[in-house]
Length: 153
Image (cartoon, rainbow, N blue to C red; front, side):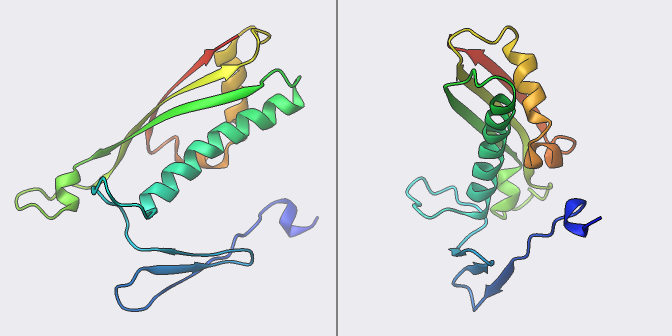
């Protein structure tokens, strides 16, 4: 059996020069990340946390779309509203007396699914789709997820 059929490795190289950010390289992309996270509402650069949150949200949606493609093509559109709840943000900022672990404590999301009312149990259908979400399955035991699925049909 070919090794890649059981385990597939993604390779990235990450380089920092001084404090100008981290340059990330792979076989197919190159990008620069300048901070882990930002509380500045005017910040226009994606942070490490932004990349993580976006990746997790899109992984969830892509897995549902992939499941749907294999099981009837009932879904026309999905719109997701994701809230990532960070615990102990003052610790991250270095506020004296605040030294608790900083982490994403909970993710609340509502996915609005346009299925023209063709899916009988939207919750069950989407939950089955989540079984193929790489990032959801990799994080669901360490982050509390509160996912809701609403049919627009």
